[in-house]
Each structure stands twice: as structure tokens, then as C-alpha cells.
Image 1 (cartoon, rainbow, N blue to C red):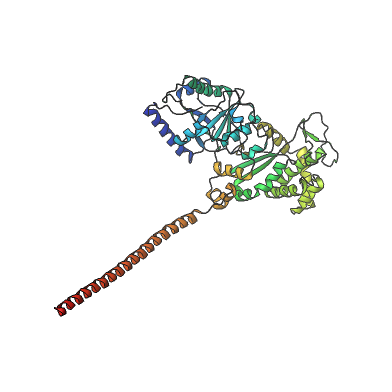
Image 2: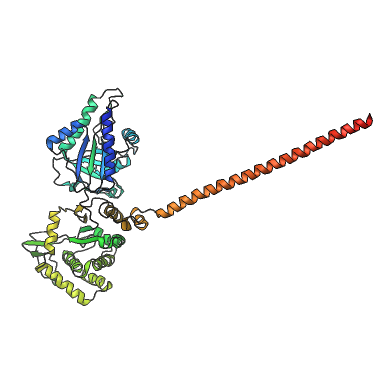
Length: 503
């Protein structure tokens, strides 16, 4: 459905939008916002309807669990809707990946607004819709929820392999706000005539993605379990970025414990049985089997969670990180998984810890059950942060919603939270984060100057050669003409002399 400005829009409205756009574009470059916000800039009719629901004029929204989210940015967008007359969902079709004509027309005229595509639920996964939106020119996908609240937006997950291909962010808004937007556009479509000047008013919105006061450091919480392969692989893959961030990164692992009231429990870590729980403060902290790693005794997972927590508590983040990498290499290889206490000991010894260190770790594990609040804190954080799936990362309290790739996480950190050019602005970091060849600015300037000077020298040399060639040609021509003239003169003189002698 084509959304273009009316040809008869008055000059003041166009001037207002232009000035407002320039202001916000300038604002994007250096301003971080402390709160998410989603507001409609124009038209006034939509703004009035939204204010009937929310006097502040704000549209509540949540961020979907895929795409690269521009944390710390403010963006301007124009809303597009593409609907099928047969009732099917346009964004579920793979018939074509060509950009719809309305987005093409918009992109060539109103470059200050990114295209936001509004989609409904149903008929296919959101990952499929998002990939189609991305392939067809959309920059943001806006989902209209079935309900008027957003208590659980975790249903908007990536459930297939398309997730890693999606670059655009997705946001979710309540149904009552989405209905206002859709009704306005549909009403205009019904009242639209065939006259060219009766094109449709656009809906322009401003979206601010919070960065929560970036102060030069980043607190990263990793919600995980010791048997989760994605979390374990993260340590090896993210290590180079951890080394780049150094003391800017404040890392903390948060371990998952389940509460199963009916299961048996045993609080002694020396027990080698299969009891999957221990009990504390009237809560049973339990673990489950992992068939991928061939873990038949869930107590191994429970004790490994405690063991890893104690390595972190007693030996710090660097030793913990080394252990997690070694543990992943030795104990969680899918071809030969050895997820047990013996493998854990081997990993500890290979990172230069000894029997004395291991005994301290075991004492700490028992203390975590009997006294320490670390387990309670981890358990409560999952509920408080509404973490329903793991592994999950939070950055300064914000759930990371982008692609689960280390370079993408690092890009988000540098975009939103770290303002250190030595870390985020160096060619080395850009090469790691963007996966592309990047050269220093000084080298680029040198190459440009060299080419410029080379061109000047080339032109000067060419002119000199050309001038010499022309000069030589002229000399030769003059010489030839002179000889020719002398020859003619001599011939005439001879003829004259012959005539005089004959007479």
C-alpha cells in the first residue's frame, strides 16, 4: 500500500518535517537516551487517537529476539503496510524478493526516514517474515501483538536457522495501538480517488533505543547452565573481544536452577548418587538431563554449576574464563562427551590449578548450598529479569536481542556503551567486529594524496612531452619548408639565368 506525501501538502508542513528530521538526525550522532520511547510525529489524527489511550502520546513496545538492535540510537521511520486481497500474508510468501514499488518510491524521495514494515501475526514464523522484510527493502519490522499488553514478548523467538541471517531489528507493539495505525491507513485507502494529488498521508515515527547511561564500562551478565553448548562455546569465541575490552568489561555468570517440588534432594556434594536436587530455603534447586551430551545423571550438571560458580568466586574472571574454554574442549565435545567430575578435574589441572585448589573449590561448593547466597541470587535473577530461555546476555541491564554471534555482541557494546576510540575505533577492532578489511585513516589519506600528486606529475610530464613533440614537429616543418623555399628560389634563379644567357 503506497504511503507518499500528498502533493497538496502545504509548505509549512514540509518545512516542519524537514527541520525536525535534520534536528533528530543531528541528535542521533552523539546523544544516548535513558529510556526507550516510540512516538508518532505525524499525522495529527493518529497522535490524537494514541493520546486517548496514553496521555503522554508514547506507544509501548518491546524488542524482538533477533536482528541487530541500534542501542543508544534515535531513528526516524515511515510505516508501510503491504496486504493481500486474498487474505494471505504477503510477508510469508517467497514468490519474489523484489522491493515493493511503494518502498522504492519512498527510498528515492524521503531518504531521511527508514522504512518500517507493519506485519500481523499468523501463517508463518516471525523469522520468516523478518527475513522477507529485510530482503524486500525494509529496515525495521513492527509486529502487532494479539493482546493489548506486552507481558510476555518472549514468544517472538527465532525457532529456525533464519535467525543468523536477519540483520534488521524487530519491535512489538500492543494490538490497540496497532489497530489505530492500521485503521488510519485503511481508511485513507478506501477514500482514495484515482487523482494523482490524492495520495496517502504518511505515518512518521521516532524510535529511541535505550543505552542506559553508558559510562565507559559494560556489565555483562550471562544467564546459562554448565551443560549448554551455546554458552560454553561463547567463552572461546568471545575471548579475543574480552581481551580487547579488558577492564571495561564487568562479567558475571548467572546459573540456571530448576525448582521441582516432587523430586528428591541431597545437600551433600560428596554423594555420588543420581539425586537431581539440593534443598535450601524451602526451594529445591534441581537440574535436568542433557541427551546431546549423553548426561544420564542430572546431578553432574547441578554440581558443575556449583563448581563453575566457585571457580569464578575464588579465582576471578580470567581463571574462570580459561577453565570454561578448557572444559568445553575436554568435556563437552559432541563426538566424545565426558561430562563428569573426572573431566572437570582434568580441565582444572591443565589450567595450572592443583589438588589444594580443588579442595578449596569443593569446600566452596558445599558452602554455596549451606550458607552462601550466590545460588539464591542466581535463582531470583532469572525470575526478576524474566529469563525464560537461556543462554541470554544482558548488557548494563538490557537484554541483548541480536544475533548470538560474538562480533555482533561486541558491535552492540561499542555502538551503545563504550566510547573509547582505542577499543572501538582502531582498525584491529573494526576488522574483528565487522569481518572486513579496514585500513588506517592515515594510510587512506596518504594513498589519496599520492594519487593526487602522481596525477599532477603525470599531467605536467605529459604536457612537457606534448610541447616538445609539437616543438620538434614545428622545427621539422619549418626546416622542411625552408629547404623547399630555398630549392624553389634556386630553381627560379637558374631558370632566369638560363633565359638571360639565351637572349
